[in-house]
Structures are given as structure tokens and as C-alpha cells.
Amino acid sequence: MTSRERIKCALDFKLVDRIPIENPLSGESQERFPTDMSQPRYSYGPGRSRKQEHGSRRYTDVWGCVWDAAEDGVCGEVVESPLRADWSALAHFQPPWDVLEQADLSHVNQSCAGSDKFIIPMWGGGANLFERMQHLRGTENLFLDLAYLDPEIYRLRDMVHDYYCRQIKLWVDTDVDAIHLHDDWGTQQALLISPALWREFFKPLYKDYCDLAHSKGKYVVMHSDGFIQDILPDLIEIGVNAINAQLFCMNIESLGERFRGKMCFWGEIDRQYLLTRGSVEEVRAAVRRVAKAFMPEKKTGVVGQLHWGKDHKYENMVAVFDEWSKI
Image 1 (cartoon, rainbow, N blue to C red):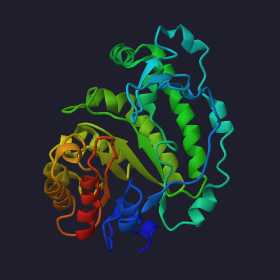
Image 2: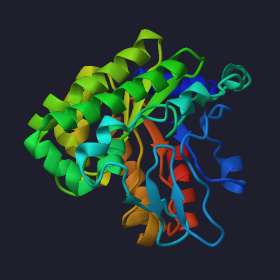
Image 3: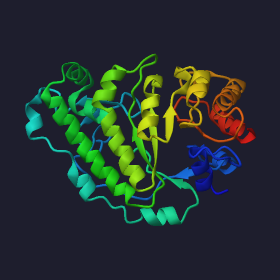
Image 4: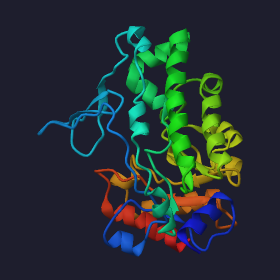
């Protein structure tokens, strides 16, 4: 089996020769446990982005949001939002269309043809609708907006949505295998908004993304941190093929009983405790727990994965992939 075939079989709930993995590590770990996925070669236009000044952790992204990181190795937080003060700026605000108009995807198909790996533009080739709305409006403001549902919040949503639809259209016309959606929807114990509001206000837009992808034969992989169990049936319904979620915020066995065979689980292993402070054997036991929950009989429907963090123990991350190789 090639890497591409292996991941596609996992997504389609067909048997695999071994558990496919997304390994973000390099060097010896990558040689021992080669990743089954890769990203294509591409570039976007500059938009409104400004590079960091020397010695500063502050930078401006393509939408004009200013970020600041308190320490190296983290993305930081938005400290200046274009629409934070009030809604008056919305009348003149435009998404960074030039980012897409100046995008160079001319090497993407070559990247796909020249590799047997599953090719997906992670983090940059799909949509993060909810997070972008927070960045533009400010998180506190946005939650108040969602409570009142004044007309401006619909205008903001639809503007950002139009941008991501156009971005996804660029990608589904290439030879990539999947698109990537990434919005963090959960706290440690619940959704950030009510499931009813999520279904009314956001679900139809995610369905648009899935429909665009499936119309060209692409898979949809979605990332969301936190407790998102309440909306997993909805994600399955609209066509999300795989979910990258913080499984250890939820009851893994319950997730397995309810959703295995309906959605592929693309990782992960607990990064709040296990990868930072757990023992190697605890990490190995966690991998076996995930495997038992989501594929108690047949080897399929799972991609072994972890998120790299600056405080994670290297030996624990290697142990994750070593244990997956034994299952």
C-alpha cells in the first residue's frame, strides 16, 4: 500500500496494512516512522501582512489583525482587531482578495504527482470561519454579537464565508486529496456556544465547504479542539470525513461506540498532560486505548497523529508512533 492508498482506505473504512500516521517530527523519527501525508508546494499573495520587527513577537496577518506572542514557539493572540471598536468599519472592510488573486498554485499538481503521500494543504487551504470572525471582531465582542444576532454579524459571517468558499474552490480544482477545516469549537467540557445556535448559524456554511470538496472528489478533514461531542453527528451529516479532535477531553469509549465506522478519527493523543508530563508507558497505553475504542475488530478508520508542542517530551512523541506501528 502507498501512503495515499493507506489514508484513503482509513477514511473509507477499508482495511489497511498498518495504521497511517501524520508524523510532524523530523530526523531519526521521520526515518523510523515516515509520515503518510504531505503538503503541496504553493504560495499566497501578501495581503495586509507585515513582517515582525527585529526582536519583536508582534506581527500583522493578511486580514490586518495584529498578533503578539508572549514567548517563542507559540502563535500568540490577536491584540488589535480591525472591527473591534464598533461596526462602523464593516461598511468599508474587505477580505484580502489579493491573497487569493495572487496565489501561485502552479506547482500543486506536480507535488501531488511526484509523491505517493496523501496531499492536503493543512491550515492554509481550507477555512477557519469562526476563528477568523473572532480575530476580526475580538472574541468577547463576537460572543455578544452571537447572543444578539444583529444584522451586522450576518454580514460579517457571510463576507468571511465568501472568502473561504473562493479559497476552497481554488484548491478543489487541483489534484490535492483533501481540504482542511480548522476551528476550535470546544471548551474543556462543552461547546463555546449552544449546539442549537451552532446548527442554525454555522452548520450550513460548513456544509457548503464539504459540498465544494465532495463535488470534486476531495475528502474533508476537520480540526477542532475541546469538547465537541455534541456536534459530531452534525459533522458526519454534512460530510466531514475525518475529525482531528482532543479525544481525551471526551469519553473515548463513548465516542467509539457512537461514531466509529461513521467518521475517521485523525488522532490525537493528549497534549495537556500525557505528551508533556506523562511517562512513556502512559503514552503507549493511551494509543492502545484509542485503537481499542475506534477499531476493536478491524484495522481502519484511524490516522495516528499528534500535535507537536514546545514543551512536549520527544521520547513521548516517538513512543506514540512506535506504538501505532505495533497495532
